[in-house]
Image (tube, rainbow, N blue to C red; front, side):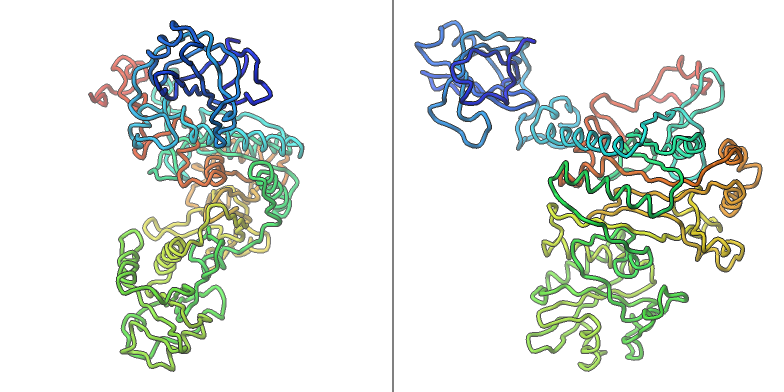
Length: 600
């Protein structure tokens, strides 16, 4: 090794020792009589000192020629610093330089390699290899490493075996769009990159590997946002001879272990919430339960409300057309927020009217100090009716009621976004607070009116609840069938999801039929799985965690890109290597692809 120590490990007890360090120049400070250099590597930063009359003139002159990010190898003695820095682990010592070798000079970087850099996202992504030198980015990848190692330790201790599954697989029509790869040896035919190892891990269960896991790269050709990348990583797991309770208990244990190992937190048992309650009280199947602010329904005219107690109506019959025509009138109580100004309320109104939110307006009501209610619809509602609203919301003086109305699903979605916005403004979404839960009892199928057919809410291999299987035989009750499926949600983010799988060929064929597959199509796409079920498939189920999302959650970041060494931008491009890019006509010809697609 060129070095004897790293730039992060030397302390006062090393004083007097001769050491050799290697690293990059963070900055230099030349005070004439003394010259300081901050030397940085992955492990930390150490101050080098060169004092006139102590170090040789040759070494001092050599040091004065150094620029930022020069790569050095430095030999010297550890000495106690006169002016200590208690903000850095090596702040009590410095190296009195005896020998300095420049291993490689460096151009001036296009942005500062510091915690608070002057580089914007695009510039830092173009020079990602420089961005990775910054401490915050390095710490993110170190956290990712710790999460991966802790995951492997826990699952290994639970008798799981790590098995790699293929990356070049068959394209399937369900789910997101596939990335496809042409086959040179099979002209006109294509592989697909896996959206998940779903069918392979089920085949491993048929093979008798009763506890499988893999930290695996997956690919989806879909529109991107902060928590999506075209390639991402899953903690993918499957178990045989289990029921839903076994899966929940096992992977609740994994997440408890990760919080303890990575964050030093005890999170306890995870509460459970049905999908119906999540939608009813939060308008969202991944509710942020760090704060309450549950929905309160003032009118519910849906044809099949989830529960009978949602059919109350204390807003109709007062000639307010918005409420009279609405399928659902629902709101939240923003506690102690009656102080909101008219300008703030107008901002909230504009927020819910954004196209991506979809509401047409916002009704509000303040509970005054004397207990009376002042609303934006006083023209239509007498005080005695507004007091009923107050009672329904369990509101107190100083509270602010925010109410939306309209078609049920759209209104719940809009109020969910408003609830999160209010929670953010009230400081209730603290990134250092964690509120995990299981959401269970999802619908098995959802009907798409445009295509006039059912789609699987999770995927086609999800088993229905055993007690609901009979409902599949009646077209009127198919939509009521619940899936044997579950999601883990933390702070409003779905970090994992899975299900008990179908392991019987007849039931799986029935599921394909409900999803619009002919027998021939099902056999062509999934015949290998259907055939395998005839050779003794055990009952099995599993889960997959979004590894990147889990890391960003632990790291307190909104974007998973911060925890990926070389991420893509929001257009799916790697601006550092300029990918994707055209390929030559010769390559296309070799792949039996028409050269007309060659662009630039």
